[in-house]
Length: 242
Image 1 (cartoon, rainbow, N blue to C red):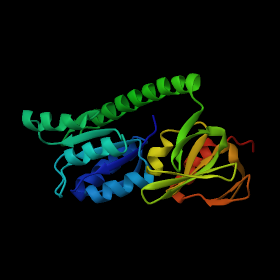
Image 2 (image 1 turned 120 degrees about the horizontal axis):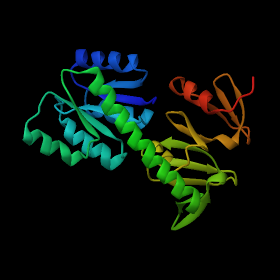
Image 3 (image 1 turned 60 degrees about the vertical axis):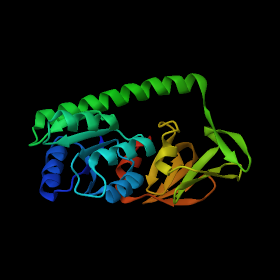
Image 4 (image 1 turned 135 degrees about the horizontal axis):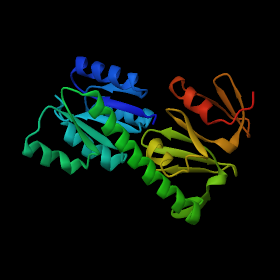
């Protein structure tokens, strides 16, 4: 399976070695982060499918503390990388509910098996959620002043990141402000109908009128730039006849 992976490792040589191994297996590395602050910024920007996290980050926050915060903020799956195998470390790490543990020094088979098992679990969970959503919901509720309003997915044209909030624009010339990060908001949308095209934008595939170079033209003639790191994914999800 393909996957966008964030590596969080404070030793640069180890991070590069891990990147080389994973890229040779066909995975995409979105960023090498060396501390909590960098990891947070990369997660907000790229919404990785999976994070490989060093347990012993030489930072104000350990890898375990960082993984716990990621679980609470983004529900991002984490696999720990560690040279420590003692019971105390293992019990502390379990509080973050990781998807696996990979021992250092790295073994390619162990790396691949842990990642593929995690991706399989995620795909299975996503499939079950998709089935439930198809049967029950084709809408979400968003806050509008002092009330919650039903917003059909078909009404959403695009969403824009704004600090810790997300602006959601509908085809009825209405804007809603959602108090969550763009990446987290995207998790509430059906993946076959919406796509992230930039660190700051998610668009409805049905709202796309044209693509010119790195510009997406929406049906309301609003133009959005496709980020370089998102272009390949965007083009792979657009049904083309050439």
